[in-house]
Amino acid sequence: MRKLLLLSLLACVGYASAQVAVTYDDEAQWKAYDDFNNAFLDKTRNIYKADTKQPNADHRGNGYRDNDVSGCAAAIWCQAIMYDMVINAYNRAILEGDRTRANKYKKLHNSIYNGEKAHYVNFDFDNPNTNNGWFVYDDIMWWTCALARAYEAFGSSIYLNYSEKSFCRVWYGSETVGDDGSYADPARFPGASGGGMFWEWQPIAHANPHKAGDFRSACINFPTVIAACLLHRLVPEGRTPPTEARPTRQTKEWYLEKAKEIYAWADGILVRKTTSGGMALGQVADGIHGSGPEYTDHLYNQATYIGASCLLYLLTHEQAYLTNAQRGANYVMNRMCTSKILKYENGYEQGIYTAIYAQYMKLLIYDCGLSDTWVNRYMEHIRRNIQKAYTNMDTTRGIQKGNFAQATASTDVVESYGASGMPALMLMFPARDMDATPIESVNEDECNIPSDVYTPDGRLVMRDATEEQVHELDSGLYIFQRKKILVK
Image (cartoon, rainbow, N blue to C red; front, side, top):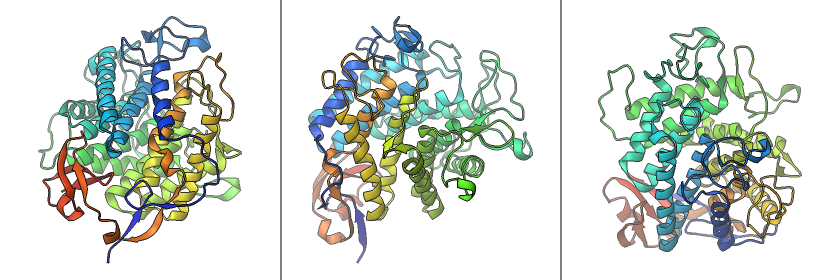
C-alpha cells in the first residue's frame, strides 16, 4: 500500500509540545498582515511606501533614513515581494476554505496589481526611467516571479503574458535600450567569463554590450532559475519554438532547459561545496566580477538558492537539488542566526530579505517530502523567529521593524522592508501548524476522506470527492484537502 508523508497542515495531524511557546493564533496572523497594509500601503496609489514617515508613495527615494519624507515609494523590486504577500494571503484563505477572506484579498490583489502596473510605466519593461521604470535586470526578474505566481493563483492570462515578456526582456535584452541581455552566453564569453546571468546593463538609457568580468550576481541568477521553473510549470505544451531574435515567450521545454543551465553555473560557481578551513556547505556568494566569488552573506541569496533548488527537485526528482536546498537552509540556521534568531541586515532595502526567505522555506518544508526530523528542525527555527518578532512588535500599530531581537516602540520610524518579515512568515506558516508534528508514515486510505474540490480562484468543482475522482477531472490545478493537486 502506498504511503504518504503528510504535514499537519494537511488532512491528518499529530501533535507534540512545542519547544517555543506560541502566543499568537491564526487571527493574530491575519491581523499582522492587515496592520502591515494599514501602515504602508498608499490607499490612493495602491503601492507601498518606504517607511511610516512617508505621506504617500509617489516617487523613488530612500526615505526617512536619508531625511527624505517627500513621499518615497518602496523600491521597485521590493514592491514585487510585497505583491507576493497578497497572493500568499489569498492562497492561504483558499486553502483554509475561508471564502470571506479569499474575496477580500482577491479584491486587494486587484487593487495592488493595478496600482503597481500604473506606477511602474504600465509594465513596459523596455522603459529605463530611473524613477519608476526598469534599469537593473534583477528588478525585472523579481516581478517575473511574482506575476507567474499571480497567474497560478488567479488564472488571468495577462499575468502570464507579462511574466513571459519580462523574462524574455531580461534574457534577450531590449531593442529600445540597446542592451544585449542578461544571459552570459558561453558561445560569446568563452571559459570562465561565460555562463550565468549579468546583473545590470550600462549606461542605463543606451547600453553598451556586456564584457568579460561584468558582475554576475546571485540575486539575478537564482531568481532566473525560479522564474524559469515557474514558467515551465505554467505554460502550455506544444508551442512552436520562436524564430525572432528577441521573442516575448518561449516553449515549455526551453524554460526547463535554461533553468537547469543557469542553476548548474550558479551552483557550481557561487555556492560553497567544501567544509575545509572553517567553510560551511551551502554558503551562497553575492556574486563574481571575474576572479573568485565574493562571499558576503545575504539572506535573500540563501533564500533564492533554496527556492531554485526546491523547484528543480520538484520538477526532476533529482535528490542532489533537495540536498542543496537543505544545505542552503542549514547554513542560515547555523551561520546566519544569533541565539537562533535571524540576523538583521540593515542596509538599504535589505529588510525585505526575510519575506523572500519565508517564500522559499515554505516550499522546502511543506512541498519537498522531508523526514519528520528535518521538518521539526526547520519548523522550530521558523516558530522561534515568528514568536520573537511577535513578542517584540509595536502593539499599537501592529508592526515589527524587522530586527526580531529588538523591541519596536510606538515612536519608531519603521521601514516597510523590515516590517514585511513578520507578516510574510505568518502568512506562510499558520499558527495551527506551530504546535504540530508531521506523521512520517500514514496509510493513504486512512486519510482519503471525501472533500470538496475547488479551482485556485475559489470556484467549487465537486463536492465530497475522493482523491481518485479528483485525478479523473480535466487537466488543471485544483485545491483538494487543503493541498494543490495538478491533474495532467
